[in-house]
Length: 169
Ligand SMILES: [Ca+2]
Ligand SMILES: [Ca+2]
Image (cartoon, rainbow, N blue to C red):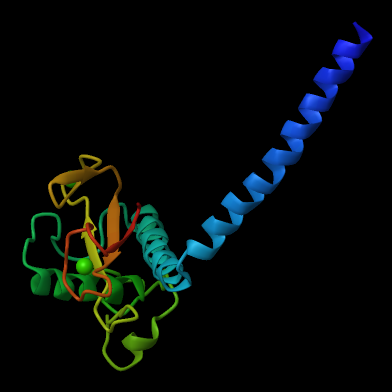
């Protein structure tokens, strides 16, 4: 009986010693494969999402212009500039108190409302304009008050698919 218990104990030890390096390798692989540029863009998108949330708390409506039904990327980019200007407190109509809900992006210093990704493309924003809790994106639906994305290194808006970097994921 005692011998059996010792065998079991040794077996557990061996399994444990095998699992630890495997877990370590999986973790390291995950850390190394995470692209820091994409992580940074994702955080920028998240930053805008939080600013939109703060705006809706104060003003009880969505900032900017209609975006949910806009299918043209250039039109959406212009609407996204209006939203960024609003969040920066630079749009007296949509943000009459002039409250800044986010830090100004570098690009906005020369072009008001500009919020560019690493490939100099405007971050795109879609808001839940009809307040039904979801936003259509490239044939699917995202349950969020706002979706913010970079069109990614291919320079083409894939509506959250392919190389686009989207918040929320
Ligand atoms: Ca909606
Ligand atoms: Ca893309």
